[in-house]
Image (cartoon, rainbow, N blue to C red; front, side, top):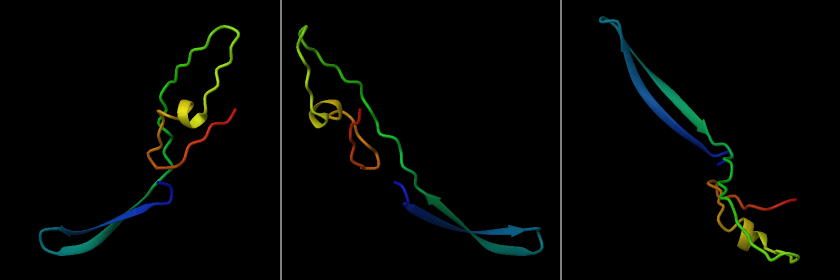
Length: 75
């Protein structure tokens, strides 16, 4: 998720065969906002009629966001 971070710390040793040197490596991973996962929608309506579908029960019903963000429809 956006702004989430995880940190992993490794300790490693390098040697030239005579002298050893130990050090620590810290890796920080910062999350990003992943795109929503969308699934195509299908609707049917009789000629000269109007198809009305709410976003929550229609267009967005089979879509999701891996980050848990709420989805909305514009346009």
